[in-house]
Amino acid sequence: MENNTKPLKGIHISRMNAITTIMTLSLYILLTITVFHVSSIIHENNRDVDGFSTSTQLGELFRSGSAFLTEQARLYVTTADLAHMDSYFEEVHTDRRRESAVEALARLDLDGKSSAYLQSALDKSTALMEREIYAMALAALAQGCDEASLPPEIQNAPLSSEDRALSRAEQTAKAQDLLFGSEYQAAAALISEDVQDSQYALARIYGQHMENSYKQLQSAMVLHQTLIGIHFAATLVGFAFILLLVVLPLRRYVKDIESRRPLRISGAYECRRLARAYNNMFALIMANEHTLRHQAEHDALTGLLNRGAFDALQASLAAGGPLALLLVDVDKFKQINDGYGHDTGDRVLKKVAGLLQKNFRTTDYPARIGGDEFAVIVIGTDPSEQDAIMAKITAINDILTHPDDGLPVVSLSVGGAFCGAGFSENLFKNADSALYVVKEHGRCGCRFYTPELAQSQAR
Image: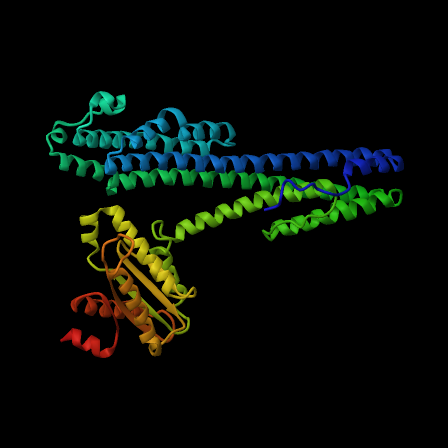
């Protein structure tokens, strides 16, 4: 992004107008009008850049506040540390990041859509707080906390008679399920979608403003050219100035805008300011688009390609060269979730994803295609490299079965298949057949599909 603190250099159009006034008063008046028009466009673009940057920061402020509430509630029900409960209500009553973001965005929003999405996210987040407070109250009851020492919201939580009658262990388990279960995750995802929709709305409205501004700028350029043509003979010096420092840079700007690339900073001071303002907004929009595209194509937990991106990749590789498909299952993953909790299960999945990325090449494509199901497309390989691939899986299983990071022992079952001419229809089926054989023979291993293996399955 262009450094806004670095002083801009260049000849000011307003100063040169004093020279052209001596040559012809009428040309000066008309050019001054266009200069003020260009200056107003620059000012509007600078304001849009600041507004878009601030609005994006407000969206992140809301995300951090909402995530903080979720984190503190979960930490309390899992650790029983009252400091997390205190931090939770300090955010609710004092810091108020979510409310501050909504109030600030309402003052900046140009069409009301973005702030409406963020207000919807706040409403859903507030509704989700009732579930969080109920879970913390249930956990406090299970821990036998002194009710008088708890925040009023916890004291007044409407715990049902059925939940009060549960054993302490059951109360703790239910409190954790309220905050870690799929229903909670779905509600939190809706809040995240509203925040994301708010950012989309901002990008659209500021993008439209930028497009309108540059259409006006193009019209101003045409006016400059017309005036210069009329008074060419009497204003040769002024014509050279406008041509070299205003017209040509603006023409390059228009081409750069049509080609969706940053502007080359050149020309008069005002043109340089315009280029800097455009480049700042362009960088912000490109970064936002990259972030949104990455979120749409990658699994939020592991960072690998998600199922949608994996399916699209299959289609793009249908007419490619030789490759292999590996289908990977985490053995007995449900037992990990049931025995150690979903947080540990998530850490196991992240570990598996990291090992797949580390052990395969950057040209290969690891993906998470299900809850505990992964896949790897190995590019440019054939059956002669089967042993090398199996060695990678063996190395990964050796790490997983001898953990040194406090995680439980797990292993991978891997089925693979080769294809010499891109991704074929039978490749997935063949790899799945090989995976089935691995599972039938004790898991924790890797097999590749062969016709003999298919015949043994048929028998």
